[in-house]
Image (cartoon, rainbow, N blue to C red; front, top):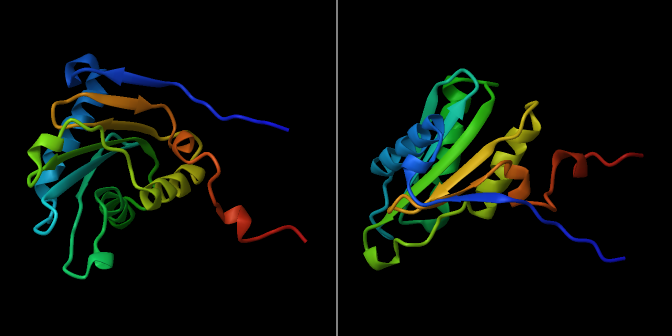
Length: 165
């Protein structure tokens, strides 16, 4: 039996096309690129989480000479959330970047890596509403996905760790 998976997303040409709350969150993500430590790749990523209480939490990617020891901006922001606002829900996540070593490559719209998708999906499963995802490029063009669950349709979850039986 064949099946399919599809979802809708919204494209925007500039932050001014967004609802004010989303535009502010995207601006916070753009500012969070300054929190990045990316001396090796020059690829600075910023993430901003809009919490259910209205607070915005930011994170920047953190590289390390031992490459596997780095952390993505989204997970840096999630770690901050966990430390400062334990168990607080997330309404939306915005992601921005700037590529200092290859500025000609700044037209691409950035999406979370697989580990970050999985981490955001885990948080989403703990709350009673979806997490909206706003992804952009340095020019301010981007995509909005209504739920992070759309970004990882065949996700591994805690349910797989505790099979029935």
